[in-house]
Structures are given as structure tokens and as C-alpha cells.
Length: 356
Image 1 (tube, rainbow, N blue to C red):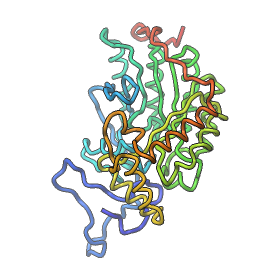
Image 2: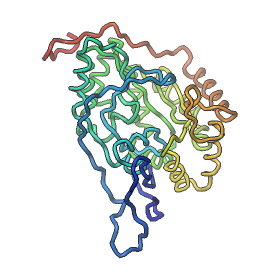
Image 3: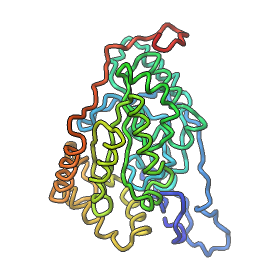
Image 4: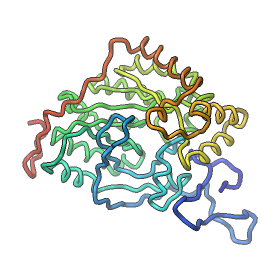
């Protein structure tokens, strides 16, 4: 449902989206009713402590290139309008729209659960991607430090990890990441969608600025942490023209390699993203929607493995050609090192020494 036809500042989603698993939902039918409704624009973020039984998720998708994912938080206050993870909030009884970015589940037991998994004789020492669904450095991490505690566990076990984030808060943990990277046990991927701050403020409202992300890449690289820049997602008709500039800026900051995805609006993401487009870019919304659909074979959501990430068709091929051309120009001779699984060593119970 729309919120009185007025934009909600500081949020990516502009609507609530019905949960596909619930038969009933609550909402405001008429804002002119007798009872004064709670103003959706003023609702603060709600934080809920979750108690999961496990923390690692085996990644079986053949086009993602990771073994395991670990997400300290469910839902993401960054509020990116296009976020593919929004529909996962429906499994918790919440909506994929505003609920996704203002009801955050915190997994405080994540470090203990991870250590339990790493101590199992059956652990395969697969690379763990911290994030992958929601950002592990979203605003609440500054207070909770769940991600830092998880990193401390991986450091003690010499467990190879990768991090995906668009928040400069990752630099708080540079001491851990630099030490792990020195042993070839850590990579960081920084997502950089646009260099246009006006666009970023409405599309990714609670993320670090583009310039701060570039400074983050530089700080990580200077400290010896391998950095991959994720130009993701590229949005046809909105951000695709920025690809050369983003790659040049990221390479200049010290990133070792680059990758990209083309936006797709899976499930409940589509009404959220369409609403956002019409709210902030009414003059080009139809064009952007048409080009996204063209890049995915006529639908805004092609979930077919192998082409869902890069898309297909003329628009998708053009984006890929431009990306490869400028990646080869600015990243020639640079490669991300392969993480070393051979150093994994479960420390004795209670050991606190790090890489002793």
C-alpha cells in the first residue's frame, strides 16, 4: 500500500508490500478516517534479537562462486530500493517493502554458532562469505559488533573469508582484516553502484557515500587487503552510463579486480522498485522498466542460473561489452589472490592468541 502519496525520507522503499505467505495484512484504507493512523513516515527502526539454531548457509547456486554464507543480520537498514534480499524477510512474517529496512533481526549468537560449526570434524573449510544476503556492516553493527566478533572467530581458526559491503564501517575491523590478509585468508568486496550522490541518497539512503567507499577501498588496499569492486547492480537507463567512471575510480583507489551484475527485480522487489522509480524518477520510470525487462528476456525477473546475474539480449550484451572494455583498460595485470584453505587450524578450547 502507498503511504499517503508522500515520499518517505531516509527509506528506499516507499510502500508496504503484502507478505505472500500471510492470508491477512494490516494497512490504512483511508487516511481521512476517524481514527488517526500511525504515520508510516515517522516509524523508527525496530531491532529484534533472533535465536537461530545454525548460522552457516550452504550456497548451492552454481553462478554465485561461494561455498558458505553467513549473515549476522536479517533485513537491512541501508534500504537499497533494488535489493534482491527483500523477499527473504517474508519468511519471518514481515513485508519486503518498508519492513525489510526498519525491522532488523540481530543474530547475537552468530560467533558462538560459527565456532561450533568450525570445530566439527566434518567442516570442509569452504570459504565463508560474510554477508551475501544483507550487509554485515549496516548501521546497527556499530553498536552490536556481531560482525567483528565473527571475524575474531575466523581469525583464531585461520578460516578463509570474504566480505561484501557498501559501508565504510568495515575499516573499524581493519586490524583483523589486514592480519588475515597477510596470511591470504581475507578478501573484501565493496559494492559501488553510482558516483552520483543525489542518486545514491534516494536509492541507497543509509549507505556510505560513494566517496567514502572509494576511500575505504584505498584504505583496505593500502593495508594489504585485496579488494574487489562490485559494480552492482547496474541499472539500465539509470546507472549504466557510469560504468567507465566507476571502474576508473575504483582502480585508482587500489581495487584489484571488478565484477558486475545487472539489476533484476525478483518477487516482491518488483513492486518496491517500480514504486521507487515512479516516486523519484517519474520522467524516466517507464524507460528504465522497459530496459530492465529487455535485459532479462522480456521480464524484470529472469531467475535462470547462468543468465540471471548478467542478463541477456542487446542491452545486457552492451553493458557487458562496456564493462569488459574498461575493466581490461583499468585493471590490466591485476588479479585477486586465491584464499588459502590449508592454514585452517582449530585452536584449543579457550585459546585467545591470534596467529601465534
